[in-house]
Amino acid sequence: MQSPDPAISIIVPNWEGEHFLPKCLSSLQISANESGRSWELIVVDDASNDSSAKLVRERFPAVQLIRNKRNQGFARAINRGVKAARGAVIVLANNDLVADQKFIREVTRLFFSTGEDLPRGLLGDRLFGVSARTVRWYDGKPNQLCMGAVWRGGRITPAYSSPSKLASCLFVQAGAAAYDAQMFRELGGLSRLYEPGYWEDYDISWRAAKRGWFSIYAPDALAIHHGGGSMTKRYGEKRVEAMKVRNHLIFEMANVTSPRLFAEWIMRVPLSAMRDLRYARGMLDAVKSLPRIARARMTSPTLFTDEMLLEHYRDFTPSY
Image (cartoon, rainbow, N blue to C red; front, side, top):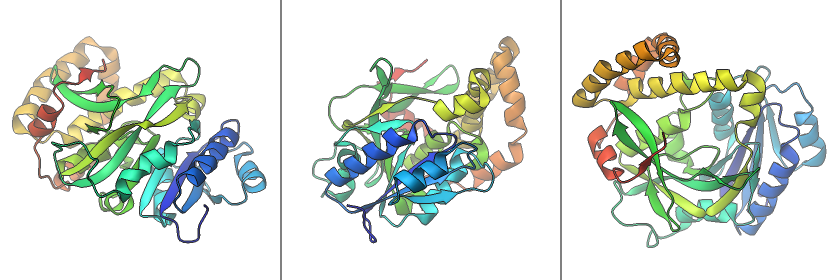
């Protein structure tokens, strides 16, 4: 039930999402009620020009609406919602998500468990995040699975598996996930290096794992996801793809701290840029953020090495 003292805070970032929000918010409220725990639902509207804010006020009066005066991007919208959240567990849900009835219960229950039902052999001993399973709305095919990473061609390549039970994962994908609120804040929230969006959830997951905090993939936490609705609408498919290329490079520049792996990255990635115009443009854009990237590298404490993380997920299938 919606509560003045919630155990769970559900945060939905929104930009121009009036067509998605009714189903999204309705499904999240139903799912939250079914969880059996107290909750609050927060929508952070990122200066939409459509009727999103009016829709929330009129049709969902119990929802806490936060409005940005100017558009600030995905990371800052999330971080503002997390700052306002009162729950010990935060759930992040994209505005184009439709949650299954069991979604909230399944994505949050491990935070309230004794730990006896967690997969064995995890890297650390503190639960940071739980990543849900999502399927595409138009064909029901997998959209978000159990995500790890492999070292391939001098690069960190996202990789996946599709277990039917709880399993260790490296990347918690913020479009449908739950986090320990205190840990999320301790890491400084989502990094602004990746604005306006993409890879910031991979970044915070990697930093958490290197601290010795582990994450879990929960296949029973199911939701339907439109996928890239607001971002594609605003920037177009070509610009979105360019963002992904740039931000992948920024992620590696900020987070690959192994001298051996970073040396290989330096030798191989510029050669790729010479052969592929997309990478050349992405590299030029990424280099503009070098001072901020350098600060991120220096201020991220680690317990596990890059090699240790990659070794743990070596059996995952590369995504591309």
